[in-house]
Image (tube, rainbow, N blue to C red; front, side):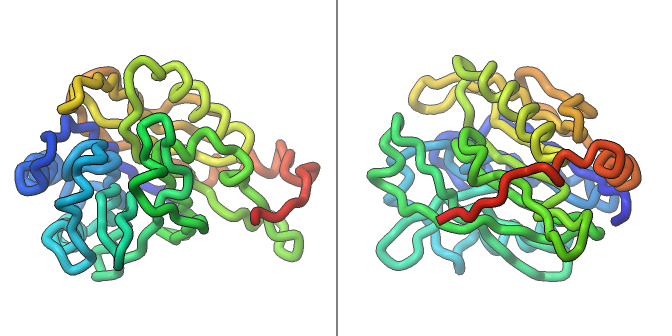
Length: 265
């Protein structure tokens, strides 16, 4: 593992206007070219979190997938964030992971937010995604997934001691301001309990339904301590996660060796 530069992009997403959002986020990330390894955009960054955006969902050959791949190539960094994407008869809240070499992976949000009826309108994913970047194993998840620690739990390979499922836990979100304490608390818990760094990006501003977002994007070390932290409004910032510091913490505090074994069905 090498040290990993991660850039958090906390934007005020334009309601139901993918072209405007591609322009807006493209402008925010343009200065990051050559300066970072990973660029993290919010959940549903082309539309905002909206059930009504289903009707205009793109597919994997659409302009947003092309855009995110172009941005990754131009920046020389992985670019990630989620959008509504239609696959067959269903629409997924799909996190895209575009690499500068042209690769593309994705994770479909497993836990759909029933309080906003997301589970009635979107198709649910099933399995976690793990991707590698500069020797780091990264597990990217979406918003409401944060509340489900069993699904998130970091396990390790008993035949290769020290080899964890992941080293960096990543969240993209549209997490409303009234629940900001839960966002802040659960992110720190996920870092501490999983002996992992965390990078989390939430949107800012107020959406077309009148829901306010406080931002509170953050990069946390393995102790849940912030390395980079935003409040409200639009912000872009970069921090570096230390590979050696993470390895040293896991060696001196190997709580994973006492963890329960289980399988997720």
